[in-house]
Amino acid sequence: MRGKFYNNLMKILGIDPGMAIVGYCILDFDGKNIKLEHSGSIQTTKTHTESQRLAEIYSDMGIIIEKYKPDVCAIEKLFFFRNYTTVMPVAHARGVILLTLVQANIPVYEYTPIEVKQILTGYGRAEKKEVERMVKISLECENLPKLDDTVDAIAIAISYTRRDAIMPVVK
Image (cartoon, rainbow, N blue to C red; front, side, top):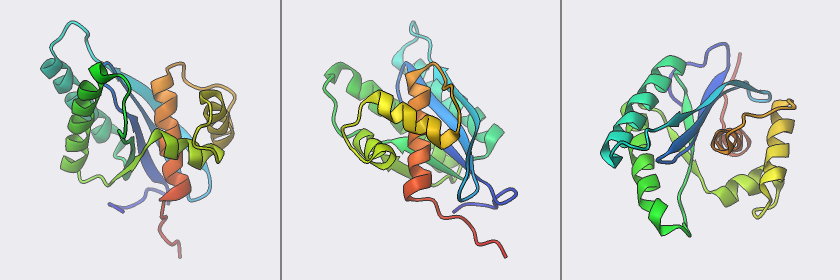
């Protein structure tokens, strides 16, 4: 793990990458409880070139990292795409995000959508509503952000808490 944990809390940055919309969240995790500190999205300008949009993502990710100082990042891993017209732009956006994380020395954990569903619901082919229900239960809340991309980022971050999180020993 990187750095110190503030008040024994781990800050987890969850990311659902995309070219048009990057969903993200910041979760506070104490080894048992999860609290949603912040969530949102980076929405790139559709009239800009792909290069300009990637620069927007790079800049905004840098601002998010600087503001929230996450200890780790959980990000969706691309494994298969049916829509061949979007796979390359999403891969490019993901690459820019990974570069930003590496430059900030933030450890990265990757999860495929099937892994997220398996971790949260116990079934890798679960429906979106089932995943949303498990996110609500994990956060102990009734309402989730409106954007699916943001909810997906939260689900990805929660997956990290369930599978890979190692909290410091408190003496």
